[in-house]
Amino acid sequence: MSLSYRQPGVVLTDRRFTVPLDHTDPAGETIELYAREVVASDKAGQDLPWLLFLQGGPGFGANRFVGRPAWLGRALKEYRVLLLDQRGTGASTPANRQTLPLRGGPAAQADYLTHFRADSIVRDCEAIRREVTGGAPWTVLGQSFGGFCTVSYLSLAPEGLAAALITGGLPALDAHADDVYRAAYPRMERKNAAHYARYPQDVERVRRIADHLLQHEVTLPGGHRLTAEAFQTLGILLGTGDGSHRLHHLLEDAFVPTPQGPELSDAFQEQIQQQLSFAGHPLYALVHEAIYGQDTRPTAWSAERVRAEFPQFDAAKTLTGDGALLLTGETIHPWMFDTDPALRPLRETAELLAARTDWTPLYDPARLAANEVPVAAAIYHDDLYVDTAHSLRTAHAIRGLRTWVTDEFEHDGVRAGGPRVLDRLLALVRDEA
View 1 (cartoon, rainbow, N blue to C red):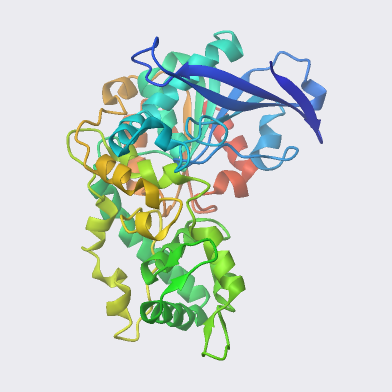
View 2: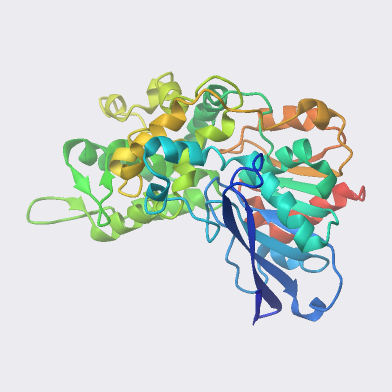
């Protein structure tokens, strides 16, 4: 039974659906999906078209909005919105260190997690669309990984789409994970350079913290081991609109004097814990490289292997000189399954996924080349998380796709620029721009 309730300016309805774990075996095991329906209070009784929002990730549930902020307010002017927790996230049969042992050992867990990629998410959307819309196609807004899912949607089930809107989420159609990360590390280096140009005082602060971590064992309040490499992953902040400023504020007061000498403050450690922990989104770590698997080549800890080709990211080597220490971001490494207590029990499962050689294609280039669905994509210039050159090649490969390439926003433009971003994309798919 669906439950409806109100927040300022909106009526919300909790909706739950049952779908197959494996859509190739519809009579087999099932899982439960959760989604939140949102409609403007003054339109609650109207027959409105639907907009499905697919969150970035992988591994993150849909936004828990209060009222109608950001892009949601613009969407509610003409749509009834469905905020879907993709399988394994939020309230949709969550997959984590607590629930995965119900599947059995690491091999069974890894087999289970092969069903948590974009192709399965698209099949979920099609299964629930028939119930939600009565069979009518809907518009999909895909942010980041949600955009990857949207390109899979255009490949697998375009008949379900009235239009597709993509923000920071056009994937390379045929790139191996190695290709993705070889393009990513130079972008990370550019983001570091921009940050240190804005906040030159952070060069010494970052070096001092990394040097401390190389000489001391630090365990954060939640049990996370803070190594120099783990600290470097704070560079993931540099891919968002306010991330450089947030990083600067985080670094300002890292040390406090103690009887034993300078130590990292409790306040700093608490903030670091919140940034580094995968407790709220373990799927991000578990299947992050699997979202690039499309053939018989294993991903084999691609980000870790490719990092060795970029020695300028080596903290110990950097600290032997006087250069700026480079931070990383949007990469998953095997040591994370040792340092993070939310991931430690899943180390063997992650190893099996990294070694897997039976990945199936997620995109259909021939079908995309013949696409008839109106599609518009916001591509952010020098996006830290999704390579711009890869996105532009994919844009050219999808028939009729219209792009908006901008440096006004970073990867989180749909949050920061909300109504304007959505307005622009809707104008493009309606041929009004």
